[in-house]
Length: 324
Image 1 (tube, rainbow, N blue to C red):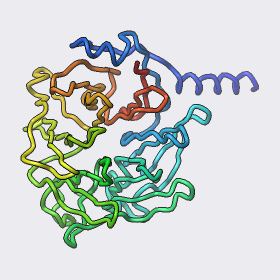
Image 2: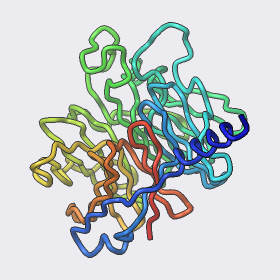
Image 3: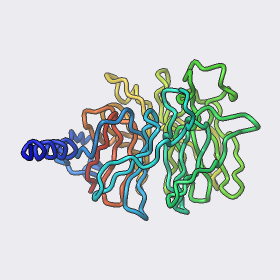
């Protein structure tokens, strides 16, 4: 009995700590400065349904991420491993609401609060990490409820930008009975008074969103089969100036693959990391692909850890790989 128990413990440990060699595609020399060609991808945990929205909390040295289908925010750290952190993370009713009632994109703001895109409650939610108490930041625009806020980023001047596609609604793309806003918009929230405005209204399927560290550019990923673009917008004092431009067309960049960007992040040098297909596509500030980090698993999002790792939420598991 004791031997069987030991074997079970060892099997569990190995399943959560196997490592595999990533396929690092170096398409330009700049990629060699980002990651070693022999980098190892670690599996930090599995058994999820759809891992999303990772964010690193520097104050506690741990990672948080969502599973909108399991309505749970998970925590991972070196000491405690992977475990549920907040459940339910979104919708708190007892009846079925949708296939994705939980939170999606997460953000740790400058004040140290957790800001979540709350599918089930159709709002941006603030969560106090010391008490896990939730409160609404914004839940309406012009008196109408949002569809299902999906991803969010924070501008250095104190604004949130977030996307609002219908993926968390009961009927998803075909939902007409629950929708109150026709557009799948991009919104800006002023943190001082929580005022909100729709700043982009002409995108069919906005998904991931990110702002450059200097606040000069805003990127929006489209999960649109007819327009699989990553858009870029010029910002001046957190205001969009002019029309957006196609930063990269994934269909043209990868004509033999049906890649669509999901979550995106931008590093200090302006490189864009786009979760797409079976890993992360790395794009230089000029819009040229410089390389790929491929795990072989469908990847939804990524986040930089203060420990030097790139964390990736990939289908039913959490992965990480060391960056240079």
